[in-house]
Image 1 (cartoon, one colour):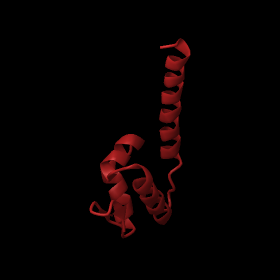
Image 2 (tube, rainbow, N blue to C red):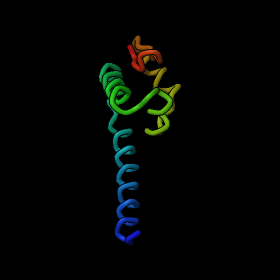
Image 3 (cartoon, rainbow, N blue to C red):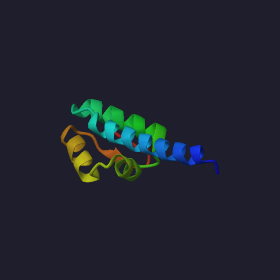
Amino acid sequence: MPHFLGLWRTVASEINESDTYMEMQQLPKDPVMLMSALNMKLRDCYADLDSLCDDMQLDRASVEASLSAAGFTYLPEVNQFR
């Protein structure tokens, strides 16, 4: 494998990790906006809430507690908060 391909994969991996960290830091604090953002990510990128939380380094219990306080519950059968 040419050296630049290995270097590119390393850089691409670091960019992906950085993007995940930035996304985590930029999640909305407002519960309705948070629910909307998480539902979009669940719809577009993740098979379930555990995958999203693992990838974004979020504590699932904290996410569910925050949204539960605003009246939202995670429904695994539709992979959404409602």
